Length: 335
Image 1: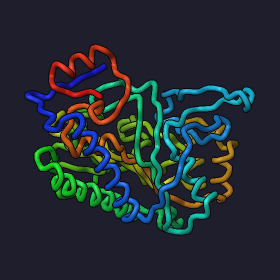
Image 2 (image 1 turned 60 degrees about the vertical axis):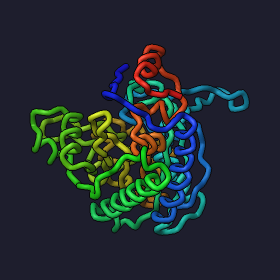
Image 3 (image 1 turned 180 degrees about the horizontal axis):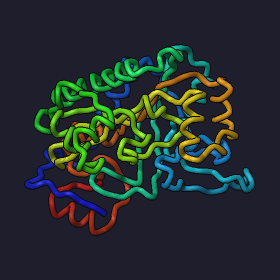
């Protein structure tokens, strides 16, 4: 457990006012986001069958919560880590067309998460996915979508300022782009997290690109599952977060693997056995659309816009007792 206490922290809004602001932000953002990105809201599962290969293994270490169901026999059911793969299947199943997409309210449990101001075992985010042509699987198309998401977030700052002027966090006016290798070249003596903090503090908001493959130092910037993002066409949106003096990741997103990058990345990770799973076979046989997609943290967005010190102020989860006590001592209103 790690906990940062901002000096002289003032939450500004009461717990009830915060709840009202959370609802306003969530309702307004998803409406604007869906409209700007041409996305339709759909329902999504909380759990999937392990044998489907649809669950996201994140960095390959975190284990999903799992159980069996009385009427399904011994089949292992897993609570989702994310819907990265499921969404691509859904676009095909529901008959979405080129440049159309979907978004959903995704809830997940990540029991192995290291809890701190920004990380909770409970995950809530808008998961989205959109159909592209194969020719549109380019860095320029990726950047266009990143800029659109940034524009919607920036617009939300103005919406929140109008209703809660004393509480709103003012965001930078521009998003910058840098690759993980460029970041390593710029800060060769820093760890990956230190590099993220340094560049985000310098620029205010950045999209760090090309996450998952090894860099020139033989290490990965960060882990990414080999079977959803194309590691050459993905990244994270980070804002410098003054209350905690660190980079705050709001979104992880990317253009998804095609039949070639899927095989290449699975080979690099030594996980070629996944090629026999239904989802992976569908990609190899080109039965699924080419897509771009990602997730946007709902609680993190509320935290960012309302200048909250702890994600537990904007979502209900479980925290260690000593963390809760320390937060209350310092005016941090854990729900």
